[in-house]
Length: 207
Ligand SMILES: C[S@@+](CC[C@H](N)C(=O)[O-])C[C@H]1O[C@@H](n2cnc3c(N)ncnc32)[C@H](O)[C@@H]1O
Image (tube, rainbow, N blue to C red; front, side, top):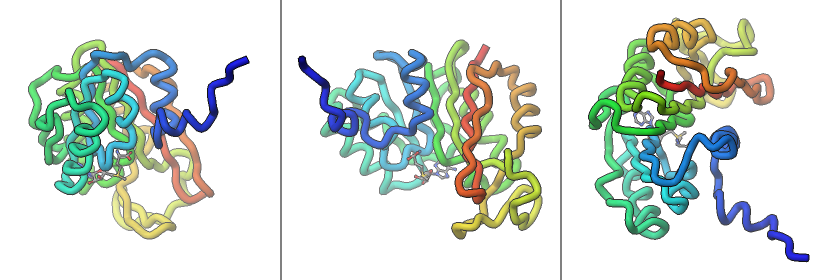
């Protein structure tokens, strides 16, 4: 009997976030869809998607990251134009309204420079999403660690591993959802890492 080698999983999916993988398993990302990876970094979350025929675009403030993802696309998905990958801040996305079927934003929003910057980034991610589209965000919050984190100022916290991060709380996310008129596609899911940080997965549908 033929077995698929387990080692091929890594070759196929690379280091894709498991919560994004969950959305793939649920069928929320399909071949031919136009997807924006906002704050794409080195492209770990789109390595598989590029090869699966998803029309991947990426933005990041780091020019080095954009160079790396362009190189990755050239090797793995030569049909994807290099112009799909752009240096930009999430608070001013260089795309038309409703340009994407899916927008993903993994491990970026806690780098917000202020509450206003956080909200502007989320509203930009929302603006470029088509009605019916999915916004997938994963970022650090206070959820599950309320009262246990070291507050620096307002919503900024000193993280045990060194940096100061902007941490939204559940109330803020609910308020933003209400403001956007968003529908939760999945329940809010939070993983607490070593009682040190919370990583929340926030998946919304634009109605
Ligand atoms: C921790 S990395 C995550 C990269 C990738 N999303 C992932 O999950 O592997 C954070 C990335 O967000 C980018 N970034 C941070 N703030 C940003 C902003 N305001 N606009 C665009 N990119 C930003 C950084 O340059 C970095 O590449």
